Length: 412
Image (tube, rainbow, N blue to C red; front, side, top):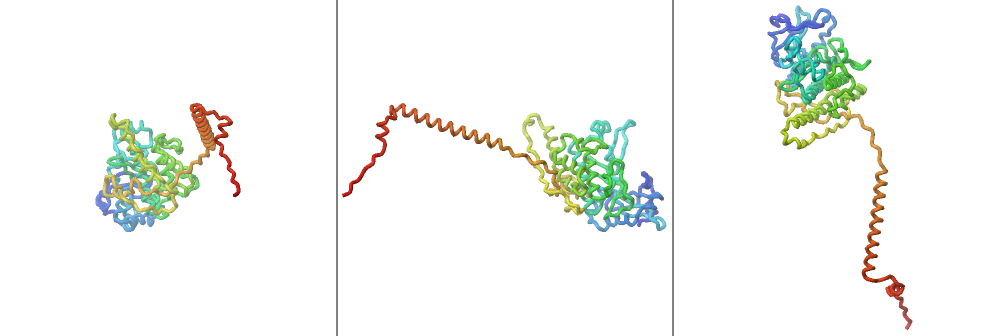
């Protein structure tokens, strides 16, 4: 634990229902440029499991490799050390929110800096434009790809987010799409929670379902995708997706929101589908800005993904490898999964089989018969014409002359 007096001069940054956040200038980390201290209020200290909170520190400091820990801290305000005062735990230190996860918003009072909460994006494009946010189709898919990739990484290491909502998920669009999870002390690690699991109104799982599991996280990923693409804060209806939504992405959103928990596509399946959606959107964008002389040249469509089977319930995922073509924003950002990983195990809901059409074969048979009859008539006509030209008429004597004669032999 870090003694509270070792944090340096504390400057209040913000506060919430659970505690107060201060800048901690004297705390250094090999994973982040600056750290902050969250000090719990008295009523929160009475209900928190500090042993479970300590396991979060153990994960980043002892369990993960350096690269994995670096990536974890790049996507989440992860508890890195407990803080104590006079032998009693009072809170923890975590990475400060990186500068890129703040946004300049136009409001009625002018332009103001604000944390880039996802809720700002769940609105109609006209509202985004009024607030000074410019986001195209490919960027929407890229943000969803980062959310799915981040969840897959957390699940791989036994972490479930639980309360995924547009207020505790931050975004960045420049220089590339990125996301950042906050309120991480409420996450569940190895099926243990430091704090009671809560849900944000409007972002809850179906009634009776266990909270903070890989399945509840998958469901809320479906809500994030639907509401981001539809520009709607509240919808749960996949029919509200825009017509331009790729068919496989539409299907995975629908399956996620409608299937039973164990049959929901898990986040790693999303990264594959979203990779193709990003490529297709980028192609359309390039085609739209191409010179007029090249307007008639059709671009080759992206390859259609083939997804093999639905995901299993295990939280273990394939190793996370860095994207080959995305420039890193920071060293930690290099270790996300590739844009197009090996196809995950999820299959879209099957379409009803098409019925056979025997009528087609009947028509083909009749046409063939007519052609044969016509050919025979043509041959007969040709023979008749040849006979008339030669002047030969089929008389009885003529027929007799061409008949073979029979010879009889006499016995010697």
